[in-house]
Every structure is written in C-alpha cells, then in structure tokens.
Image (tube, rainbow, N blue to C red; front, side, top):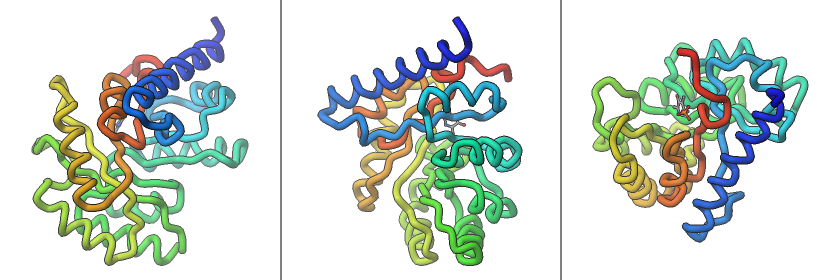
Length: 224
Ligand SMILES: *Cc1c(COP(=O)(O)O)cnc(C)c1O
C-alpha cells in the first residue's frame, strides 16, 4: 500500500469509530470534531491526510508548529490549527497569531498574557480551560478547585472560553475522569469538551466529547 492509501484507511477507521460512538450516544457524528494531532510528524506525513480531506490539526509546541504550518496553510487555506500542549506565557503572542484554538489555558499568568496578545492583535482564537482532572502534580491543567476563579478571570479578560479540556491519568480507566470533566463543563455552562485520544475516543464521545485529539490512530506509532 502507498502511504496515501494507509492514511486514507486510518482516517476512515477513526471516522467510523466516531460515527459508531455517536450513534450509540444518540448524537450526530458531525457534532464531534476530529483534531488530528500531528506533533513530531513532518509535512510529508501530514500531506496525505490533507489530501484525504482532513482539515483540522493539533500541535503541542508553538515553535514546531511555526516551522511546519505556514507553508501547509498557504497551500490549503481552509486548514484549522489547534494548540493542544502546554503554553508558556512568553509564547502567547506567537500562539494567538498562529492557532485557531488553544486547548491549554490553565493559569492566571497565561490568561493575562493571552488577553494582552488578543487585544493587540485583534484576533481571538477559541479557548478551552485545561483541568488537571486526575490531580497529578506533574501534569498541566488547573486544579479543579481553582476552575471557577480561573474561568471568571478569563471571561472578564475577554477570552472566548468555549469549553474544558483534560488528559486523564495514564494506565487507568478514563471514563470516570471524562464524566467528571463533563459534569464540570455543565456546571459552568460550557458546551465544548476536548477529551479522548486514540485509545479512548469512543468512551469520550459517549460521555460528551465535542473534540477528540487523535495522533497515533491516524499517523501510526511515534518514534519518540
Ligand atoms: C499527543 C497528544 C494527543 C494524541 O495522543 P494519541 O494517543 O497519539 O492519539 C492528544 N492530546 C494531547 C494533549 C497530546 O499531547
């Protein structure tokens, strides 16, 4: 098989999984956005997915995205690019300039930096507040107890907060964490839920995910 055919087959398989989970949950498949996470993949690996019709991609580092995406976007203007990885405040200007959505807003200093960048650029990418849903010290995301205050600060600063995002603890059942994130989003009247990756996207969709972030299932295993 050519690399193009492999990518087509992987994209079809992931789309079928999304449609299957949506059907079980009584949801419309088109209400679930597939974010193809292309971190560590070069333009030659990304191009076949664009050719197969995928338009929404995710990256986890600003610098890596700046190196890859301007050329790809110039060739295909209707691409959308989402930042799914941790963001340093000193990269907020670059992130606001390049990305169409930011999934990793998680602390007051970053809210302030993003608000300043959005005001100066007149560009307001959609934002998700990332929650440290498993209370893991090494992980990004705001503590659950800080969510109300961070959300209020972000909304007062003019950030368009459309939902919550989380990465549950590894090697454990993800469903309770997805359910908890969905409950928090409902409590705060937020419609967006960025949750679910290659191994658990169907569970996430059944629990309300609106954005699934999928890398390995679309691109194959990463080399590091
Ligand atoms: C890499 C990454 C993903 C995709 O993970 P896969 O298991 O390869 O599907 C999703 N979300 C975030 C934040 C990531 O860094």
